[in-house]
Each structure stands twice: as C-alpha cells, then as structure tokens.
Length: 171
Image 1: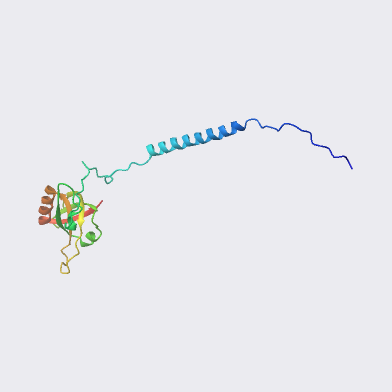
Image 2: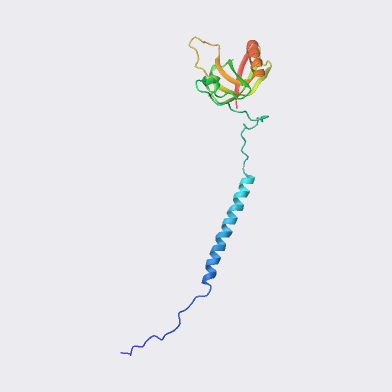
C-alpha cells in the first residue's frame, strides 16, 4: 500500500472577473429595459387613434352631459346641454326595436310615397333617450322613439313628420 500523502497547502483559487459578470448582468438588464421603453413608445406613437366621437361623424364640440336630478324623468337623463327631447314616430316599427337608449341615429325623411322620391337627412347624430313600449292598438302606424336634439332640429323633425315618413339609420 502506498503511503498517504498530505495535500500541500496553497492559496485559494480566485476567479477573475467575478465583479464583471454582475456588472454585465446589470447593464444587460438596463439595456433590455431601455429597449422595452423605446418599443412601447414607438407602439403608442404608431398605434390607432382613440377618439371620443364616433368614426366618420366629426363633431364641432363634445356634448356636455347633464347630471340627473333625483326624481327626474328617465327620458331626460341622456339629454345634452342645449338640447330638447323630441318624440318622433318612425315609419318602420321593427327598426325602432333595434334601438337602445344612448344609441346615435340619423333621422331621414322620405317625402311622399313615390318610389325613388327624394329623401333628406333631418337630424344627424341624434341620441336616443328612450324607446317607449308600443301601444297594443298602434297597428301599422310605426313606432315612437324619443330623441335628444337641438331645439332647431326638433322643429325640423316635427315639420318633416307631418309631411312625410321618417326612418332612422343607426351609427
């Protein structure tokens, strides 16, 4: 059997660059953070624009919502400043059933019952405030919808409904 030998004493081995690896990791993290920040900024700048108005229908100014007062009639809660609520009879009752309070519609008047006759837009972007339940004896007279419109538009709606049939298009 060979004689046992002692392991000679020597200084511990020190790996050089240990502090460099920590610094490299810190710099890599910082570089990744900067890269992510630049990417996020580029995505926000190139991303889709969010507008508070409906697409394709620019508004001069956004309407200011009026706060509902306790005991106020529900049809008046969606009214905007400077507007009135106008009950309008729409010729097609099935179209009115598609509407919900808060929807925006264009009101179109068809003059006379002649096919191919003139049609004109009476109100643009009118907000639906209420869709009353149809009366049982209403028959074929259309359906009622309550719209929030400027006072001048309400007068045009009343005049148009007296001389022709009204229809709505949903935004």
